[in-house]
Image 1 (cartoon, rainbow, N blue to C red):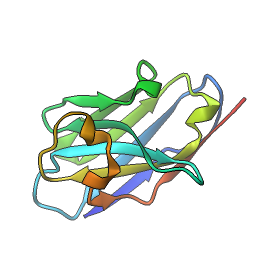
Image 2 (image 1 turned 45 degrees about the vertical axis):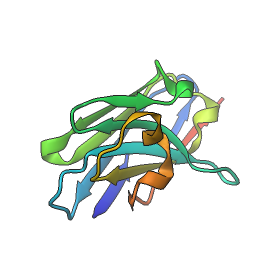
Image 3 (image 1 turned 30 degrees about the vertical axis):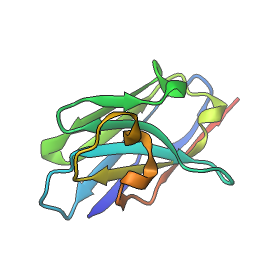
Image 4 (image 1 turned 135 degrees about the vertical axis):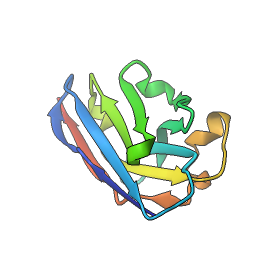
Amino acid sequence: VQLVESGGGSVQAGGSLRLSCVASGYTDTMYCMGWFRQVPGKEREGVATINNNGRTTITNSVKGRFTISRDSPKNLMYLQMNNLKPEDTAMYYCAARSARLYGAIQLFEMFYPYWGQGTQVTVST
């Protein structure tokens, strides 16, 4: 399974970015896909997840600013990030798992076997 992220970049506070993740190399449906982020010296943090019936889980720090969506037939997932803040600066990773997963644990990185290489998001003041 290959996951490739794109769409990262540098933006001023208050700006927007849209991240994309394309998945390939598998036949099973990826039940749960998500976005995680990591800054140097800290653990990877779950940002948002979406399962294949469209149910989403969003971490509190980005609620109302970030929206996750998915185009399953095209194996695509998106993260629309609005009103970005300097504290959103991180490497953002796409992750996926084929087995079912429910509730807040969808935001825990340990449950995802497939990962992309990451795309950097930098938000300046």
